[in-house]
Image (cartoon, rainbow, N blue to C red; front, side, top):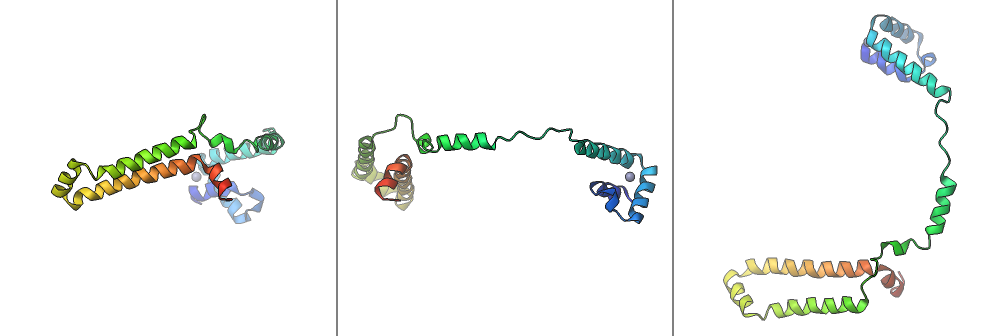
Amino acid sequence: MKCHTAIDTVYETEEALPLKTRTALAFHILFCGRCAAQMNRYRQVRALLQTGFFPPAPDFSDHIMERIYAEEGSGEEAFEIPGGIPTRGWVIVGLVVLLSFSTLFFGSDFTRVAMDQGASFLLPLGITIGIAITGYGALFIGSHLKELSERFKL
Ligand SMILES: [Zn+2]
């Protein structure tokens, strides 16, 4: 019997092993000090666990469920920004963003740069505008989830 085979038998109860394996294991342990030490440690740990050395874990489930029921009503408010931004503020910011994007194309610098650079200038510009609008929309929807879901009955 090789060492790794001997160590593998550690996890099985000795009575469940066939007599041939048990004999081979006993023979191996007789001559292999390392396996004998490991087997000894395992037997000690198993004996320790069987004697109830570790006290049973206290049952917290009732306490935890009590807390969950108590917090159930106030659960959704926890995700809102403290203080919050009024809806009028959001609309004003959105209008300013839209206005700044639309006036961008009328600037004299824009036409000159756009003529010089062509499509290679419009692509990053479009990506920037897209990111800004998407970010604004995501922030608005994310911070007004409750109101929007009530309004649209979601
Ligand atoms: Zn060995």
